Amino acid sequence: MTDAAAVAYNPFEPGFAENPYDQYRAMREQEPVHESPFGIWLLFRYDDVLRFLRDPSLSVEDANARPTMLDQMADEVLGADRDKEMGTRAMLNRDPPDHTRLRKLVSKAFTPRRIENLRPRVQELVDQSLDKAADAGEMELVGDYAFALPFAVISEMLGMPPTDADKLREWSGTLVRTLEPVADPELMLAIRDAGENMRGLVTDVINWKRENLSDDMLSALIAAEENGDMLSDDELIEQVELLYIAGHETTVNLIGNGTLALLRNRDELERLRNDPSLDAAAIEELLRYDPPVQMTRRVTLTDVEVGGKTIPEGVFVVCGLASSNRDEKHWGPTAERVDIGRANAKEHLAFGGGAHYCLGAALARLEGQVAIGSLVRRFSTIEPIAEPEWNGRLNLRGLEKLPLEVRP
Ligand code: HEM
Image (tube, rainbow, N blue to C red; front, side, top):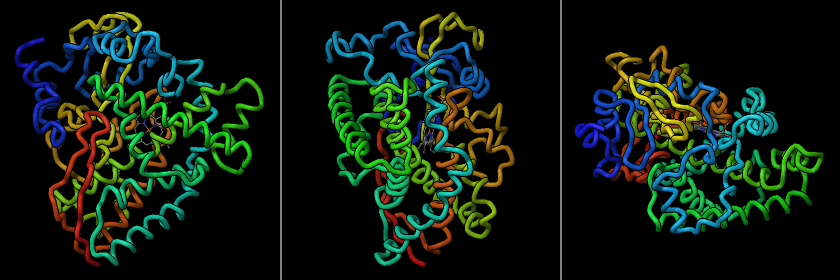
């Protein structure tokens, strides 16, 4: 590690939550393959990240990584004898053959046709929120809109009974911190508690659903669990947790960060307002420009050469999706600009890649297109009435609050 790189990549630096992109650029230039002091490696360039995402010889299973300082800290804080299998059974954390089996079971609900069938319902939910905002003359973009939509949609798809949305939001907001490459003891304990609460709730919901089967995703997964050896009890719980959390903790950032990017680039906002045929392209560009998930990870099973360095076997490699999305080597000199007509925007890595490519991508695109397109066309005035508040996360980085004045 060079001194320059040590200075360049410091997620604790004030202002990082608001804008990590200057550090990403410095890392692409100075040390695009970087070993962090925690023993984790990070990749910042598009080509390296894409190669890692698609490489089937890499793993996503924690058990294949040698313990790092963070694992030692977790043993001290949470006890070395805790159930380390807990939380490792979701498809996102499994290699084949488990990954293949789990993904196949769930993917039936996410075919393009099934997702497109949801469009009228998504539009209805969006219009209800916009009606309320129109009456009030203002809206809090994140809580009232960006979070409410994907939360309602995934709850309905799964067939969840009405639950305490605030509690759930609090727990899942804490739980997703496990996706961060840093942790402190207090946070580790909070994550454990949130995990137990979430598991308790999902178990109750599954038990309720067993008595109330219907034409929804949860019923289909329960049927798979009951009709043979396709899905164990623990696997069922963890797929539901994953879908539930991935279903709303990510799209909220697409709608929040995407809207903010347009508010800061008014010409592009006007362009979108005047041309609905740009809705799909605009969402790809917003996913590229400020992606809801900043990074994903792979684990090396052998030594791997990349960018003139050797990453040893058994190491966590953080793949910088957000950094890749601004890599001038791939995107050219306009990489740092918002251009909703960018011809190759769809090459962004916001949804990861390879076997783990986001299963919910079509749903997220649909929600983003309807939410952002409808918002900019419903109101001629959309003005922030306070500075945006960020959620302080390194990975699922997004807005916590953005109050807006809106007028037709
Ligand atoms: C804009 C919104 C979203 C973004 C940016 C996003 C991003 C991602 C990323 C980066 C991954 C990991 C890919 C990898 O490691 O290669 C992923 C996986 C996944 N996502 Fe999403 N996601 C979004 C919305 C959703 C939604 C709405 C759902 C479901 C309702 C969903 C379900 C999943 C699932 C199940 C996986 C695991 C796939 C696997 O391991 O095979 N995501 N997503």
